[in-house]
Image 1 (cartoon, rainbow, N blue to C red):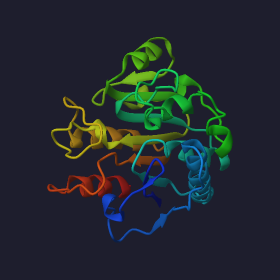
Image 2 (image 1 turned 180 degrees about the horizontal axis):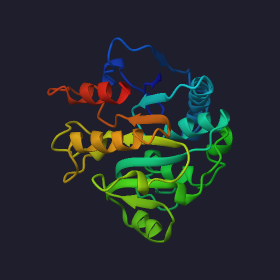
Image 3 (image 1 turned 90 degrees about the vertical axis):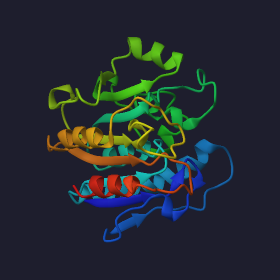
Image 4 (image 1 turned 60 degrees about the vertical axis):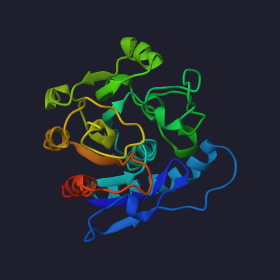
Length: 252
């Protein structure tokens, strides 16, 4: 297993203590002097480096674990596996849909779009820059997504993206072939995991999410793990849950 740390929320550099990985791990940190220009160009520069590290690890037979402060790094994880000759589907744990577009978003938040980009939305924005090929919608499984904006709900009502609850996720729910296991930790109930940027109540427990992730891992088909630590920078971890989650997800 290769641990790749990307200490950013989008193009914002995060304090190192925000991503509390176990100290014994051999970690490759990816940082860049990002260029000027728009967010897509800046992310394209960063994700080119991330995808290179993912591809390097995958070519050695390792399972890359990419830990970052947002979900968009998943684009680089997918691109890196593809560069290594792996054609994965994706299992996307998230309290949100992440299937907004520039045309539908009310906030303009780029971090609400990565799953939609992975299944083919506007490749000229960033996919072409980092060598990401889109995957078919039915090779993506969206897990939980209890907080959807109306345009996201409209899209998902007719899209071939698969849907599952956390408790219902089984090997039979998953697409065939190799997989990326993507975990936005805000899928966990916001009453249990403090300090989230986009908290959503009424979700599963941390233990329920970890159990579902293990069921995916137990298929033996996970080619990479992508962990998004989507909490506010500089926040405390009074219960130690953040550190425990990262320890469990990097122990496999």
